[in-house]
Image 1 (cartoon, rainbow, N blue to C red):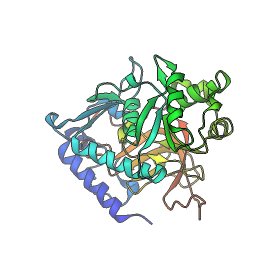
Image 2: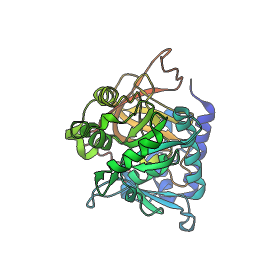
Image 3: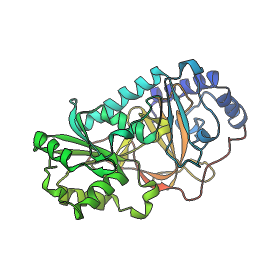
Length: 336
């Protein structure tokens, strides 16, 4: 059954962005026949995620810009630019806190970040990776950066475990970084001597440029469990274009929506696909107010799964992500 309150909030966002973003208004007028009041979630207008790399999309004046988030990419590639005001940034932080607290609890934990301190750069303009590290670092204290000058800081790691051995801790990193700096290091250095059995590992971001190194989610978890005794491992899915609206993998192995989000799967002709059919992932969120990112069609392939009485106990929608569609940048609005 469709959540009427959720649909109402999404329609309000569509109307708000229609009023405050000229470029968004042009798209709605030309592509969606001025539809700003949808009768269902499935009929809510969406923007292809690639559009954020092509044109400036914001619903706030320049003097209200608090942060500019950039997507990750090479120096030659175009980057998405996401414009946040203080209100939107604050709302995203509060929602992220609510979602993550369901996993780690309400208290901040001693924390390991699988990168180095200099990863966090200009607080007013940074990329997806920096934003993720900054966002998740809010859940930690006495934060230890695993790398120093590109190498694992074993002296610092020893000091960290002298203080927090056999205590609950939080580890955060991008999936490919965790693989490179923890899993692969198992064969080179004796990381297994450290007591990770009370650690909670949160990872996300996929493999990107390290696709050739990719291992299955099952193997990823199995190695960390068997070799480092890390039992609490949580993968998450999300986009810089909808920062704060993330989807955690539940104990059942599926991602689940939150009270602030929804997921739809669409075919090549943008038709809504039924459960258990693979297609393009559309993400819907109540969070973006400073830019029209509340309904985005990604370039990722996924499918909705119908799970009755799932062992994870989650009542929200369950879905899988199969990875990025090959050679399929979505287009259709970039000339308006």
